[in-house]
Image 1 (cartoon, rainbow, N blue to C red):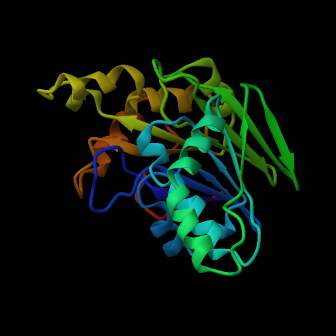
Image 2 (image 1 turned 45 degrees about the vertical axis):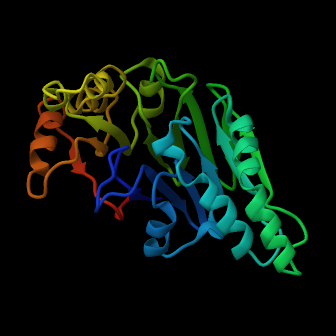
Length: 273
């Protein structure tokens, strides 16, 4: 099982970090978790396209995690030789979010159908809203969805992917909570969005300081990894982004709590388990 960080960034545009997006690949199956800014550019660099995504999972509908949802829908539609429905799994509300996205694309869809004789219908998207505890199983892959805590954003989900005797936890935005522990328990790889609360706390903008109360900081991620007996902690979605050459400062905050392997991610980082 391979984990590829397609985007390690955050809502803050960065020249080297695309928006949040993580690929988990099992054999020929490619499961995409979130679809932030530039996801298909990074997918191209990783050697696949929108038409090759087996399913898309959304942790929540914050804009930085869904910015390129419309790009995936459109590109998959026009680049596939025939009907290729996109399965989308997410928390409650993902159905309405999908409908509104398709409505926003109506003009473009009409243009393309009018121009291409072999396009006789619009893109097919099949959303499924998941309750916490939902389990999806197919071809030896088991995916568990659990509630996380990104309040006041609600509902939000984290995912645990099990295959080939290994487990990967994709946490999304959350503070420590029971659902996070459930997906992380004995995971081989745990991908966690993180902030540096010590740095953000010095920001002059209240809007910036507000993010402290609904994200895990690096030390909390380390504590979760230690408590749940994780093998490899992957820090991701940095606020603020680590300056080049200072990544170890982020790892150090987690290492104070966790003695396992820690990686400060970058775009196109690939980890296997």
